[in-house]
Amino acid sequence: MAGQTYRVQALVVCDHEVGTHEVGFNNRGPRVDQYQRIGTAYVGWVGFAWCAAFVMWGLKTVGFPVEKIPLRASVGYLLKHARDEGWVVDRPKRGDIFAWEIGSDEWPDHTGWVSKVLRLGPYFLFRTVEGNTSDGSGGSQDDGGGVYRRTRVMHRSKVTFIRIPGAPRRNSSAFLRRQKGKSAWVEWNTGTGRWKGWEGRAPGTRPNVVQRVPKGWWAALKNKKAALKKVSR
Image (tube, rainbow, N blue to C red; front, side, top):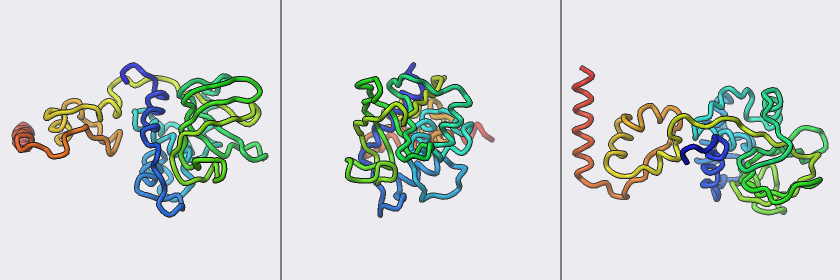
């Protein structure tokens, strides 16, 4: 994904999460807790409605500094910050974030990613990737239990689109996960090379390796750690 924007990279990362579901339908679950803690760490607790946290988790995973967005667990405050920064756009594109006002209180209730725009006009038709929603119209749209791809129809007056600026200057975590082989595995375990410092910016990221690590890789890891220890003395 080299050369892509933060927003498109984050969309791709979040799309890989489709099928993730809460455990117990109470805004909890191992993966859902990660979205909440990593995407909106300032909250300090888990168990809240997590559609915005899911979006922020995706951005943080690809290296975007979400810490600069105050009160980012709230769709409304996310939109307020976007307006202040000039990130709001009239015509949606792939990778934009939507803020959807479901009720009538002029405060957005739900958010997610635009994956493909199908029609513009008084009513927008577009495909999405969303967290904390349902897989159909029968469940809650803004406090559902999982990550789903949806096709949405929204009136122009009820939806606002946010375009996160910029692109990563270095490899994203999604790119790093695609790294394979002994060198990537050793670097990941020792925090060196391509993986130097990355765990602090994208917790949980790791390279794709064979299911059973060969014995020779363990020897390479032992030698690498011994060399690093010698250098640090």
